[in-house]
Length: 403
Picture 1 (cartoon, rainbow, N blue to C red):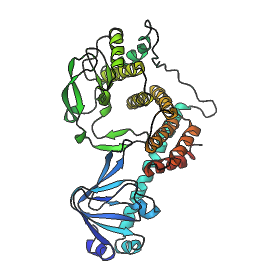
Picture 2: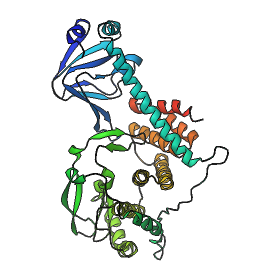
Picture 3: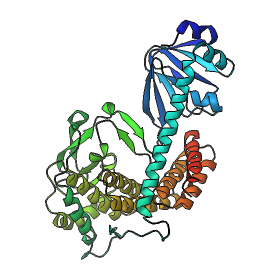
Picture 4: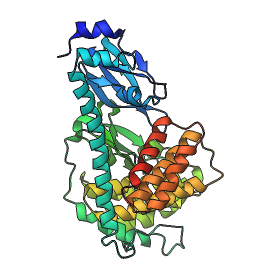
């Protein structure tokens, strides 16, 4: 236990009320904090500007040590969950604090060691993925032959033909169910299909119940005891229209007409939709969404990239290396199209996010040179997010171990 009286002699004791912001992401940092009583939550900025909780700390924990040791800007926001008392340690009193509480030095070392361990695990994961892509170092990288064909509005006789491989693949998981008890995280709501005007019950996620476990380098959010990927796609069982739940109702009239024209052929090609909540049902929804997004008047490369990226995560969970790599390449291609689309109005933060994401996906499939280039682009974006810049800088350093 830390001796509060000793620390109070050499440190400034600070008290915060519930919901008080202790410091903001991007603030200059020159001190770390030790929690004496209460608790705080650590938040980082998502690409859409929202804050997401990545951890919660309690009495005895420390935070802000990286700013103290390196003089960097704050990489996260810290907010008091309840009435909280802390002591602040800075360069001026650091030696005195360690003299009063030698065990604190060990805590700091453990914290830094944990950061390094996590980075090493990420690096090992990438090396393992690279070994799947490059089985032998003395030969050229093989090109996987898994065929997942895209739809580009062909003539009426072949419009649905490209779905065949996907439908067959989805059938492999008819007995795979969610590994979690999802009922506590879901509720049902009656939704009106914007295409056929029929109603059906759809599952919505109780966002307030989610507990974020970690954010992976490619921005996948891993939650405790729940996988949102199984529920972010809605499918109308009447006309087979499918889309991301957030975009389900946002569809132009001309695209509605296009779906009505093709609905009969798609229903014939897919057959009866899976009735039970299995991975087959989940993948079928994704594949339908893929088809319909390609049929839109102006296919959105960002949405298609998001869809393929989430498919790659589902394949990864099933340890399907070949399908994971194929879907990752598809996502990468679409995100590059999104970056290269000069007509799309974007913010600096969005540009930085996509450079970083494309860098991560390039690294994942073994394109180290391209990954490095995109990481550099993420760093030089004017007015970008400091946390993203730091991630890109860390990646460039780690790449030296891969070449």
